Amino acid sequence: MEAQPIPGVWVLLSRWDGTTYVAQSNEQGKYTIQGIPAGSYQPVAGAPGYGDERPGGLWGRVLVDPEVDTVVDIELLPKAPVEVAPGINLSLGDPTLLSCKEPMESQAVRRTITFATGDRYNQPAFLYTPGESVTDTVESPLPILLTVYPGPADTWECASIPLADAGYAVLAVGPAYSLELERDIDELGQILHFARKGDFPGADGERVAVLGGSYSAILVQRLLQRDSKIDASVLLGAPTDLFDLRRRFEQGSFIPPFGLDQVLIALGFPDREPLRYWTYSSVYHVSATLPPTILFHSYQDDIVPYEQSELLAEKLKAIGVEHELHLFNGATHYLLSGDKETKEIYRLTLDFLARHLRESQSDP
Image 1 (cartoon, helix red, strand yellow):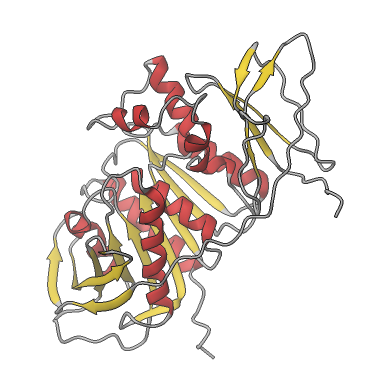
Image 2: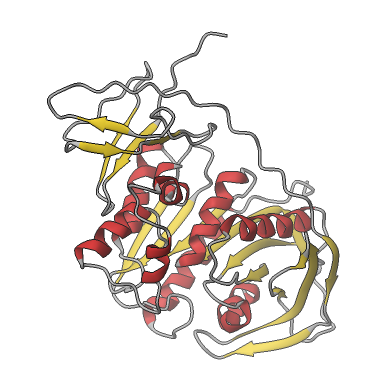
């Protein structure tokens, strides 16, 4: 079968410090990247619905001479759906009534979620539903909000409880920091599989939104690339372009705290390991299948620069994906502090979710 041109393919070359040279193919499948300094590069390329590729022959490298046009043909193959074995042996712990005073007074019923995934049990996860006692039951199924936190989910309890108290079945997880991101994303998919089967009492598997903040937003954005049935997404302080983060780090304008600079270093240099950066840079994986998205970022965020959310918002706008971008002074802890910015984030989030979680298909 004769190869057909693919519009909208991103092609990227990176220097050692994360400086990138990028172009997108036109309707004829052609692209031009200008201004590349002389040198040897490992290009990467990809497009929605296709697998990522490293063109450049046997060694995956291209020699660039500014005085000579370098032609690199790229062939992309359709991306096969990710197949993940369902989790097994799901069990829910006894209900416990919990309450919080900050960031707002609220209460909810919590149950621990346990299941087997491959050769291990899942990382700690919890189901929160509204209730004034452990014997309360949900009269009609609630929309699901899968919240993925940048740390153990039980340390974010007072973020989950107000969301549940507002009328959501909150599935809360907090994968440990790891470079095995795909395994963590598989586990998120398994939780949604349980939800869609109706295995979580009081939860409507036909209405699903996801929320992620900081590091965990990388997992959420990757999940969105896999799962087109998610109705809405909420991203707080999200990393969206790892090349840009590495460039800022090498320039000295961005020094992530808590030892997270070591994570960037562990990825290797982007000119040698471009796929590691590319795979988890959502700005190069935006597609029209993404759900409506609301982005929050603090100007004072010292873990992820606020420009990262601006970069994603630009790409979402270019392709016509419904989105909102909200930038704040303060609110650096997003969902946990009790300041006015945090309360405004809750208000905007709940309004957004109410508008975008569709009614259950079982409703008349």
